[in-house]
Image (cartoon, rainbow, N blue to C red; front, side):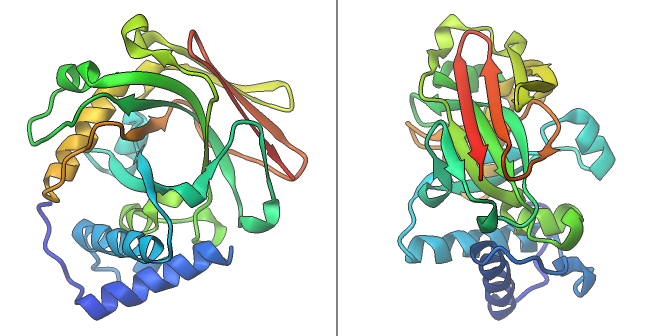
Length: 266
């Protein structure tokens, strides 16, 4: 990271506990930069990492990584030149076709994603999309449920990084396809709600190519002296915009040549 921290360990712990409690108890809070406008992205990642530490200490298991702000238009809107990343844990994972109680969430939205599993370790800095593509083993249709802990779903870049990029739940399709058989850039993606098509897109909506998103993740992790292990699940970023859902909704994602994923809100 190229920004210095402004927070001490105690403050990082306090803010992480605030956001972790908000997520656990499905209650919204005021975005943290309202009171601390000078927070940096490095501060935000420190808070996110502390939330992960808390969740692992509580018995959760790191199950993957996720990318955010992978749309060039969204990056421009937020005034950033690179995407952001967060973590996934097993507590957030739902089986394909699962029912998700609305009482566990604040104001959820869903988006369609292409997820991948890596075949070998990737290290940065300098990881290229070509190298990342060669490391993709399997590809899956997936649904991400995002649920910002901030009041009215309003946040800035620093606040959303700290809040683990609004991660809430995710569904990975029961069946996938080998990456070697696919043109990931041109994969067609359809997001439906109650049988109605909400949005369509293609893999190119994710930084031009899902492998570019994977490479960006690897290079950002390198700044934290981390690599991406073999066998890691990575949600590469939203192919579509996010849509609000309510109890009674059924969400269905289809990825061309790959498979489907489904979720029911109850």
